[in-house]
Structure formats: structure tokens, C-alpha cells
Length: 573
Image 1 (cartoon, helix red, strand yellow):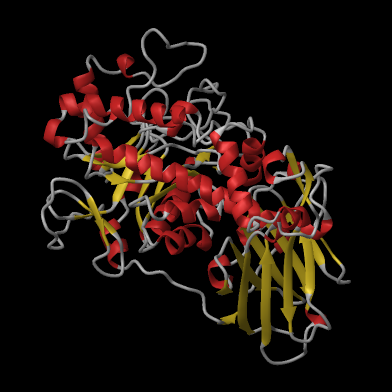
Image 2 (cartoon, one colour):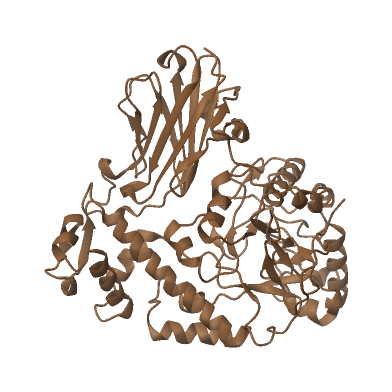
């Protein structure tokens, strides 16, 4: 049973899509007043043109399969609808669907790339030139579609580079007369309450006053990271307010859907977005290639913004494919077979549809990428169709089998218990979190905005604790180009029976996770979302009764702080 989520909920009829939370779960509402969970596909297009097709690098090209664009539209829409989809996502051939399908079209989403017209946020967001080019982009794109009842809303951009310290250094390095540089200096003046001496406590400064600052390097152990975060939020406020105001100049009604984070977000940017978007959007492939996700990632977007979230790209590739894709690199989850890909796909969509604050998910993409890579070299088996236009039957069956209506009717945010029975893990848990019983072993947060998850598991002789969290760092903010030990991310764990907390430092180029606690094994895997796992022999813990667990995590430079607390039962000694 597919379930397209069009059951009437009695909303007022509108000429545009809206977003509401009538009960436990958020939902888009279509112009007829019906609840709508957007299940869509990105890049539903005709593929490579006749003049660009290369036999040496085969790619999907509709002209080789259909006699006309009209025939392609009919065939494509028929397929998507029969597979259960009710939307087309970004970069689809909206004009062709509008021309040949009319009222039979699917609802669609548009990515405007407004800031990207002038390389936001790296070009000066406070310069009048940025305002000009954002307006030019909006004026070209919005008026032709502003009255289209099939349009759900606008993504302002895609995967902008919200890299905190790198942007801080970039604006600091602009000409002193640049509006963005002046705004940064004003932000620092405000953050340090006008005291240059206070700023110097956190920074090594090249300059004798706020006006003469030419370079800054963060002092180890001080609070410079908080100043970086303050600037990041100011920069975000400027971006989101500019995008909102520009869109509303040309369209007063359609939804503003955020800028599609790149599988990672920084908390100050999300805080800045909250006032200016109707829905927060992110590209988000599965955290593990079995299709499972980290609980904190989407929950935190909702908890900060108080708005629903939409996943605007998700993807899984298989080594076994008919297009010849090599799936080069490690940026995306890859499995061995199409059957595994379909199983992971099903698990992922079911997970998202079961979350009350998620209003849709868009698969990337309709067809496989070219056999030997697209223009930037990316060569992944992402398609429902191969490059010859043949569907992957396993993926089709997976999509057709989803009962999204039932999943949405049962959607609930299932928070972990503070009284947790520790699950058992088999094999070697130190090889990675994928094999851990994470759903049963996720620990409850007790303080702070979550930017990660902690997990617990056990075997006969050991208790295992795992961390999966986000923390981007630009080590260039330090004078020697390295995060000093005192500013490395810090994970502290308290277990009753231990003489002192387990204190772990991790993160930073060429450095391994470390602790002063003897007898503890540690393994770290870096990246924007890093993994830290520890093995604690049960002999080190009290011999009977529940284990009282407490933990805290500080991102590098103490920019963010969060805590977990639980009573662990069933620890077998």
C-alpha cells in the first residue's frame, strides 16, 4: 500500500501550499486543504542533450528513448506516481511538466540559488552588490511561477559553506572599508562590551584598537570560540533576512524552505534561520549504510527553529549496478547489492516518515550519474533508473511497498528512557557503531542543545560507550595551525564505582583520542560527524546494582556544551 497522504483534515482551502501542525505531527497542506507529506525525487529531467552525449561516458539521455518531450513527460509521471511519489524535488524539468502535463503534474519544489549568484556567504553579505545580485536572481526566477498552484515553495540555496571559523577569518581578511569587515569589527566590539583589553584576553591581536585589527589568533583555553559563534549568528541573520525580504518582494505567499544544509549544520546558523524560514531543509544521507540515522540530527533542527524539517536529498549507492558507476570516494553511503540498497532505502524512508517534525524526503536522484562521472567527477549509482532508462526493480518494489499514510498516522518522537536497560552487542564493537543496537542503546540528553548522540552497549566482560557528534574546526584560527590540547573536544563520562570521570580529548589534525584513565580502550574516527568509542572493563565498575551514568560533551574551544544522564540497568557482571 503506497499511501499518498491526501486524506482531508478539514483545513481551510488556500491557493498555495501551507504548513501546519494539527496534532502530533507536522504536515504540508495542499491548496485543496489536504494533508501532504512530500515524497519526492530530485533531478527528474531529460538528462544529457543530443549535442552533449558521449558514448565514451554513457549517461541518461531521454532523446535516445522517447520520440518527444511530451512522451517523456507522460512516461515519467506515470512511473513516479505508480511508485508512490507525489512530488518532484530540486533541479527537475518543471517547465516540461507544466507544458505537457498541466493539472496532472506533481507538486514541485524550486531551488533558487539566490545567494549563490554572488557566492554567498564568501562574498560580502553586507555589501550592496550582494543585495543587487540576489534581487536580480529573484526577479528572473520567481515572477513566472509565483502563481503556480503546484509550487510548494522555494529553497533559497543549496549547501552553502557555513564553516564558522573559516568565515570569521574570511571576513576579518576583507579590506577594512568592506561592509562585512566593518560589521565583524562591530560585532566583536559588542561581544566584548567595547573593551579592547577584554578581546585581548581571548585573542593574540595584530592591532592596537578595534579599528586597527588586522589579524586575530585564538588564545588556548580562552573563550574566543564564543566570539566566533556570535559572528556566525550575525552573518546568518543577514543571509536569512535578505533572502526572506527578497523573495517576499516577488511572492508574498509561497513557503520559504531554507538553504539545504550539507549533511552538517552549525547551531548558530540554525538559530539565525529560525525567524525567517517556514521549513528548515537539509540534505541528509543515512548516517550508516544500512539506512539508519542519528536521532539528534533532525530533532535538533526542530527543537531550535520550532519549525518542521524536510530532507531535500538522501542517497544510497550500490557497487552492483548496470550503469558502470564506480562510486568513487567516501562521501556517500554505499552497499554491495541492489537488494541491500533497497532494504536500506526502505529503512531510511520509514525512519523519516515516523518522525512528527519531518514533512518530507526527496531522493537524489531520478537516474544514475554518468558511468565515468559527471562534470565534477561524481560517479554514483544514485538512480531509480540506470543510464539506459531501465528501472532497478528492487528500488521500485521498495518504494511501492511503503505505507506512508500509516507511518504518518503513527508518527511520534520516541525519546530515550532515563532508566535504560543496556543492550548486548556481538562481534567487536570497536570496529564501528553500525553494528551496535543503537535504537535500544541511545542515551537521553539532560542539558544543552544536542549536537550529537551517545550510545551504550555491553558484552560479557565490557561496557561500551559510543559518541557520534558534529564539530567542524578550522585550525587556522590558532597561530600554529593546530588545536591545542586544552581546546580539543572533550567528552567526560561518570560511572559510579570509578574513582574519577573518564576524561577524553579528541579532534585535531594528526592527533588521536586520548585519556589519562588507565585500562580504557579508545577508538576515534574523524570527520564533520566524528565517532568516538570506548571499552570499559566491567571489573572497573561497581559489582552490583544499577550503574549511574552521567556524561558531558564540549565541542572544540567550548563552543557548545551538552549532557546526558541515565540509570543503566541489566549490566551483567
